[in-house]
Image 1 (cartoon, rainbow, N blue to C red):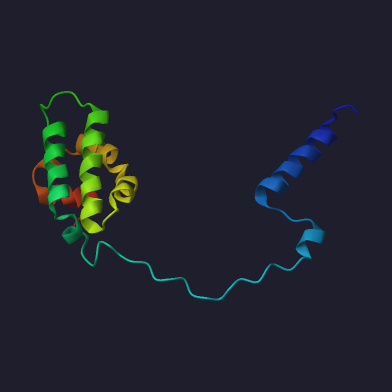
Image 2 (cartoon, rainbow, N blue to C red):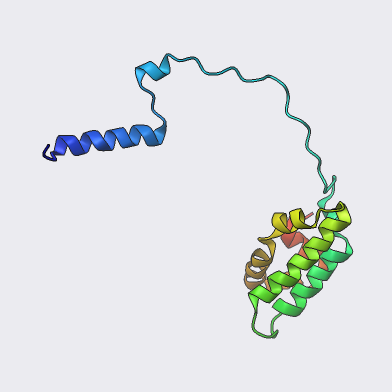
Amino acid sequence: MPITPQLIAAALLAAVGIATGAQTPAQAQVPAPAVASTPPAPSANMQGEDPRKFVDNAPIRAFYALSVATLRPGATPLDLKAYEAKSYALFYELGEMEAKGGGPGMVDHLKLIPGQVVQIVKDDPRVLDSFDSFVDAMVGPR
């Protein structure tokens, strides 16, 4: 069978239909499965009402001190892997402090934070001026 412009157009239309979830008339006639009407289980907010209280603890204060020592103007050139490893150890400690066995989950939850802090400090080194400025940069201003 030779490849014609019509064959290419038909293949593209089929691919677009598959990619967008388009249904054939036969598929459209099949009723959707029933969805249970039970409400979702409530989720726990480990941070509480004020995220600042959640981050005002020894591991996060140590993360701030690490960030100041590592990222301040005039510090030795950044070793991102070492900064991340030290940060993860503090996040692990935070997770264990919040819930026994919570260390790995907390590290996974916060794993992007060190890289984000590096970028935040590049954009505005003044976030390292105080713990409050640092917290504002991480959780937003008051």
